Image 1 (cartoon, rainbow, N blue to C red):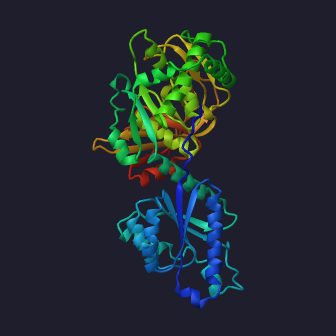
Image 2 (cartoon, rainbow, N blue to C red; image 1 turned 30 degrees about the horizontal axis):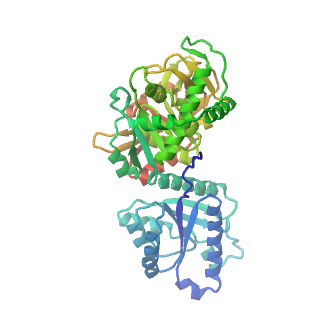
Image 3 (tube, rainbow, N blue to C red; image 1 turned 90 degrees about the vertical axis):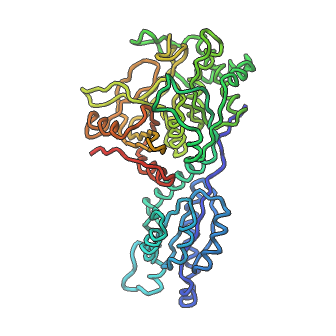
Length: 483
């Protein structure tokens, strides 16, 4: 049984721009500029994406011709490579027509002209930024957003390399959002009003398809699991998780053999279900009849879902489709994406516990994740194995996706720090989240933006990248200030 995360790469286009009048005036200039173009293409090839090069566009007529090729290429993002000065006629029809993100790139080969030997030819080779204001102004005149830009040097510029990598990762998010099939089982826990989501609305805004599934489909897979498969999965789980003795919580115990067996069997069933339904993630909540085997299965998805989430298949409890999208965005950005909400505040040390029960992204755990047997899943039916870990220490990013009164989505984004220290030994994930200027002030600001109570939690500082994704999707976003 093999699970395959979608390996289809993001498709990124590139076109260079210049001014055809120069070619007959300055011998060798076109060849030198195309050499610069090749260097940029090589930079893109290091980012595991499919690159489609449309060559040089150096007059308006060629822009109209190339536009047809660009439209046919089914791109996720395109770079406009400013190779020298170019008239905006090489760009106007392209920015007017395309609905995908355009990033203007102005990378001059020299860090500075050699002024004692400067020539018009040398200036033209390094005139990458010259037409950028013109292109920005024309985008505005066409009623389009001014494109994002990368300004720097072609060689030895870490800022440029970081920006190129960022846009390649953003393209990956955009590509997968419009190609994934997300499973959905059941309904939000206790009809949580902040979490109800119109599946058609998700498709309309993100392109993602929601596959409505039934709990009995997982049950059917559960019935096919063999003893050999269970033993192999139990070994894998015990190799990956620590199983310490209980500490202070009376509902937690050392992992019991029977809970390990159920977790292993359900994990295998879940993997079979994902393959059979060909889905790329799952949001679920389903009670099942009291004391039934179906309830046992549906309440013990935690371990299997945590393993899947850490391997690129985001899984989200309490049937929260919006947070499933947030987790997918973070996963494809390469920053994790774990199911989270706010827990008690520590007013003495100025942090808030951030975490959740249920499935998590164990790929971003600090140290070895823990499994405990829980006598009850608080607020939910059933009992069994619970996953407990702390997010890696260092910068963290949060994304809450909510629905607005007028039927749109809103991204609420913030950055903070996962700080060192003990977490409650409750069989749930928790992280000490520190936010500036202080936790109380931050929480006032976060709540004022109208978030859902769930959000996705990732590692690193990526608020600006997520805001760019929202911008490309025409979704309102706000980065909660820490000033």
